[in-house]
Length: 332
Image (tube, rainbow, N blue to C red; front, side, top):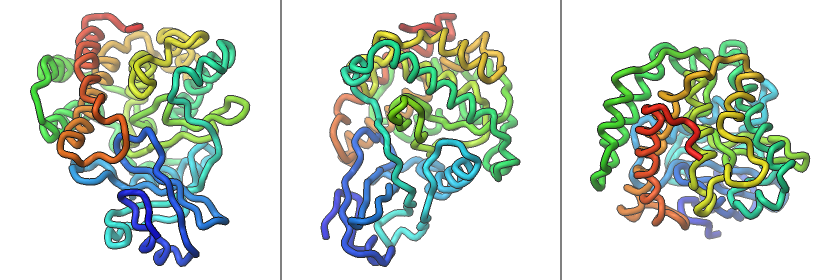
């Protein structure tokens, strides 16, 4: 058997004790690698770390497996994990298998526009509601009381992403050091909740009634400040990242960023009246993530298409971070 790059199907088959396997890689991922795997009867999704350059603390399969197990057991729409393998000898890296959940991932603006304005609004508000529902969960009650340290979360995040930036340097990025310094100078305290860490429209599966059937990609989840998730969701909505040069917020029917924040506040009961620092940090964090992807691209360590354009997305995010700290939130 042969498989997509990064997945040894023969060794995986021997480990699972199944018949012949086939697999395809899911498109769109820029970090951990995700594959659809089947033996002709059962279907799974396999996650493994990226090839090559891997940053410290990132791409932890054990953590992803743990949070999925807890959230799915609590009734939150997350895929149920079925197997964890921490031995790198099987496929070349630790990995886990989870159930295959049917649904649609929207990455293309034309597909979103085809839904129509009313459906687009319904979809985005469901996205916001699901995030509020995640933040409403009691970590200790669902077995995630030790999943992170909420105290000092924002301060550690500012330090962590500066370290990630330093570990992924392949070029000069104007303004990014200054943005970090401004963020580090005035760090807010925040409440503790289970946070996703990379929450956006194309990290969820959408069911036939425009419901969120599963939230995906939990590699950066922890216990932290829920407003960090809210801000990152807003930054993603206003930026042309994986949506082929246009942002999702440009689609007719998409709520404005301020309306999304207000809907979250109503659903969650949390105060979102001042998100400027959070949006500034979200822009910085995303800029660092994409700079890491660009680093792997120039080192020839990426798998798939679209990596050649990622580097150009960094500078606008740095600019947005400064603008948010200057008092501009909407960004669309």
